Amino acid sequence: MFAEFETFIKTHTNLSEGDIELIRSVAIEKTLRRKESLLHAGEVCRYKMFVSKGLLRTFCTKEDGSDYVLQFSPENSWTTDPESFDKLIPSTCNIDALEYSEVILWTKNDFDYMFANIPGLKNYTQKLISQNMYLVRQRVLSAISSTAEEKYDEFIKNYPGIFARVPLHMVASYLGLSTKTLSRIRHAQLVR
Image (cartoon, rainbow, N blue to C red):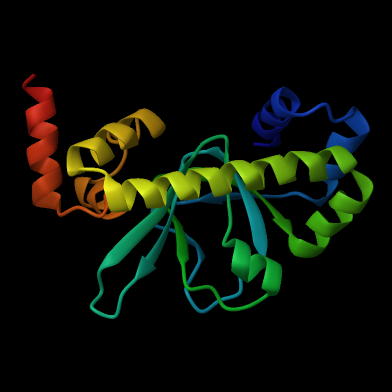
C-alpha cells in the first residue's frame, strides 16, 4: 500500500529517502470494503487521506435523504474535509468507499510534525491546495455557466474512467443534473 504512495510522492516531489521514511513512520494503512465509511457528518475529520487503490467519494446528505456528491477520489489522489480537519469542528460531509479501497491516513498532529520537519512536503501541500482552489473555482463557474452537455464533457475529461465505476445517479449528483437528463446526454453522445 505504501509502495504506491512512495512511487506517487517521488514523481511529484524531490523528497529524500529520510523524508519518505518519516512519512511512512507516522502513516496508518487501512483497507476499506465497498460502502465502508471513513467519515460521517457530525464527526470531526481526523485524517488527511491518500487513496492508493480504489475509489472514495465525499458527499453531503440533505434532510430529505438525497445525496450531493462533492468529490470523487480515485487512486493516487488526496482527500479530507479541510475545514473539519484544520479547525477540529464537526464535518458536514461524509466520505465512503465506492469500491474496495486501500488508503493511507495521517492525523493532524502527525501532519503538523511532518510539516515542521519536511519543508518539501509543506511546499508540495501548498501547491496542492492552490491547485484544488483553482479546480473548485472552475467547478463553481461550470455549475453556474455551463450547459448540461458541457458539464458532462468536462466530467469525462477530468475523471476519465470513473463513469464505468460509479452509478449514474452519483455522477448526476456531482454534476447537479437529474439522472434523466444525464441519461439523455450520455445516450446522445454514444450514438454520435
